[in-house]
Length: 369
Image (tube, rainbow, N blue to C red; front, side):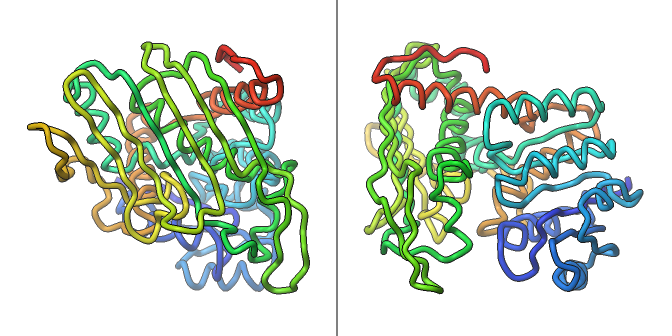
């Protein structure tokens, strides 16, 4: 069976999410071949092609998307550029995978979904947290009634970024609300997606958003920049099942940043806990361990091998490789395991509901975007 040929937009050879996660993830899977790369500069595009073994290097993402040797375009750039690059792939009639968040706003996300549907291309979203082997195993256990009826979920996710009050220059854009790439959009979207994937939809919620760190110093230049994006989210919610949910997300955690998702039921508990070097970056990057209370005491539950589809991937690439493995199966069989832009639109709508609650100080019902 022929490999799926991938063109990566945003394939900086030295820094960024593509070189940290997408490239090693694709290399770990026999279903894929990296055939093209694109960056904003010709020299970096050529160097990326050399390092990643791609036959084609581009500075024009539309040329990459239209090339006959590209079956799938992977968008791995900063959020403000997602819409124009997704449009380039869709206009070329090429299947596309875009990192989360799909767009800066719900209206942008809706437009991208409409365009992709009209073009008849497959569209997928990089919500890789739900494909972490620990998450897929926990989901099966919950469906099999491992904790009985789920009554409560408590989530704490602390990110280390900015704990020193300093940021690298490449991260400066994430603390500007207009760029839609802060803790709330990125970690919030990924975390709430994992929770809903495990337990079903959120029905209503009450939220607080807060910006506790209003300034950062850029490491390279010493420049002070203003921050207006939330770095704290408190969420009290009820799921459509009746389960109650409490979430606290925050960035700038000085000591032991990490994620814990504890699920309580009538017959026991499960806890998903981050570990390893990915812990400070959110559930979507972290390696997770699963603990349960079978017999009344906490003990670790090893993840069975059948939940690991990409055993050759590790670190930042691990969950991304699991997503790509599921996407390869979808593309070959017409399956729908990987979230698409319609799911992304719903998730954008959920974040809008959180914002409305925080702005109005009222409890809100979650409705379709």
